[in-house]
Length: 434
Ligand SMILES: *Cc1c(COP(=O)(O)O)cnc(C)c1O
Image (cartoon, rainbow, N blue to C red):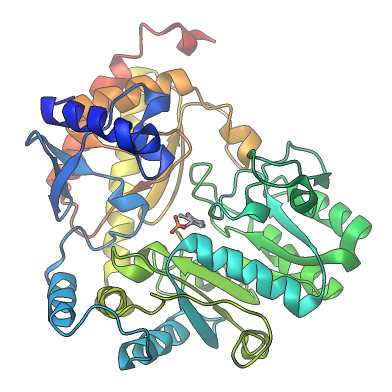
């Protein structure tokens, strides 16, 4: 790592736990000290030592247009001079709500919040308030932000009652969370057989991106819709990553399965702190001040965030970026796969559009258990070799690689060449022989 980054990390660790404001950034699992970023433009990101990288993190999802997109920058600038927060309704919020309702098939009404965590936390509260039930169902390896009820990562097994995934989460709360293996209809049916009338909702990433990218079976998503309907529970799609990423209307548009509530974040803020939850009108009207379920926010619907988000969604709504993103995604991941094959390294690629993950395993990855088989040792080599060559990836084997509209063919080719070098460097690694 460069000198300036090292120095800043030392200073950061004095005043910030672990030196970072979100744990994954520290790069602990790949054995690095993180580069400190000075600026970014398009698909390129530059650290404080002037080292430039091709960025595949994209702020963990939001930067689908690339960094500092001129229309987004102009929209933020234009608003800033007119005041940055009023704590009162604005026209921008109406336009944003209209835009979301227009783009996301199942949303009739929406409430803006400040992060994905707030969106999922509020959607769970709404589901519990609406149904008058306590239990929630989630899936192993899905991440829904850090709200207490959702931090449970119970071990595999059908209808395992949650144990706290983090100290500080009361067991009294965690025991209401049931965590099941993704893509397994039987596990879901068994949980509903046993606890059906107590279950308020299922919350799911319809296309998981937080155990690495996993592709859902369409029949699985359909079954979630059926079983929740049957038992009067709500179906919540957490589309904080997949929303506006895989299609203008997210995963629900692609798979044709409509949830009761949808959580949004990341792209919707165009790089500013935003989240949203929305869904059927009859359910959303239960929120205060119309209804009795409470949720609020001093900065919710913030004008700068709405301006950045609207500028981003305006471009995405036109739809013509998606075929381009699909092509770039295909070029990158088929290139990586071929390079691995040439080097004799076994990999599995899961990809949809511009998000994908390379797993170091030879078995299909369809849930958390199969994702965890991926070799962390090989990933560490991959990550470090890529970073040395100026390729900036998420420092974890369980994350997505994100491509933006600003990535060029040349950048993608350089990335594949760099990966070739990384894969060849693995040949001496004994894990390969196992
Ligand atoms: C990132 C993420 C969240 C949490 O969003 P924050 O803005 O980080 O709070 C929730 N759900 C999913 C699927 C995510 O990827």
